[in-house]
Image 1 (cartoon, rainbow, N blue to C red):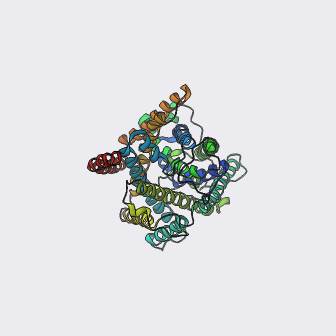
Image 2 (cartoon, rainbow, N blue to C red):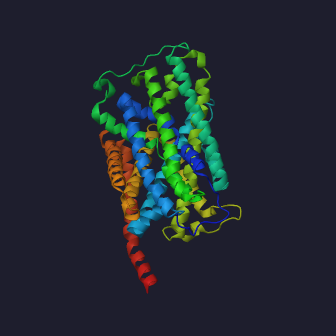
Image 3 (cartoon, rainbow, N blue to C red):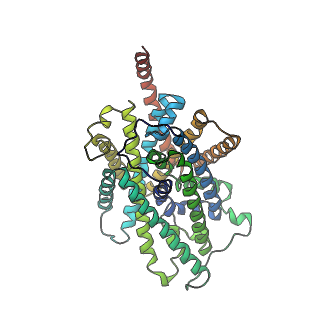
Length: 450
């Protein structure tokens, strides 16, 4: 039985396990799958299927570890609270701020992506106008609270799954000749055709497969709202099982429709795969709308999660106290915390709009890397807090190997390398702040123990 958390209250939203599964789908399926998967396809070709299978496996292992910790000791701060419990204050501080920075970057990349996609219908409208509109809508979602947020993400999840299933059905009809068009793709017959860019190409593409699975941290944050905290692992199994099936099916069909060389890094692979079928001219419009919904949904989830983490950082003294004060009666989040997240949001948008050329890929890479740094932290703290079986130990090692492979692969690709340097820069700044604060923490500990 999970322990009663001091943050629990009768007013909190209470979800069934299947609702958390839907929230997870809503939080994870975003532009990382609908858009950035094209980058992975261009990097590695048909072997992108194996990259996504590896990413799904590692994601499940990380989520299972996080879910077991949540079931044993539900905490509003989720993984950063467990990091603090396992390794001390420096770990909780670092984990929280690494996550905050990564989510701000993700919000910026999602906003840039959905703003660019909106120009599909309104080419003459300035990019910053779309970004501003979506940012305001995202903040409105943040204001509505956990219960309404959960319902909204569940609706988004159903819409996104429906869009992917629509692609799967149309792709099958196209491959069977029911819909007129020219099918140019083919099954790879040799290892060379499966890995056309070699091992280094596959290695470099791993990160973008992992990025398409980012969002499990939000499920960790939301697990505190489960009716039965012990159901957290089950919700993850269902969610990631469903996600893995639809991801691999959709990507396989896209690669059967056209050669991997026909995909473009700035276009959705699913729209490109069906571009040659004139009888379904409606599809680009419908699917573009689905991608915008997916990006907005992921951005909203990131806003909710990052503000919650900032709130817990403030409550535990790892951020200024005023970030957890000045709550409005009808608002679950304090205004100063929302203000800081909004400031980070604005800076991220400005950076994206000033450097539009390769910035989506750079920011996406940096954001994905910083998420994976926290995934490693989750796997490191896991055995310190939960008694493990032999199976747990084996899975943990596999997860570590896959995550480290995804991180290290960025060294070998020139467009991913700048994102690696950006993420390292964030880590260096956080490390310097930790070193500066260690004396103060030791002094605080001495006073508390006196």
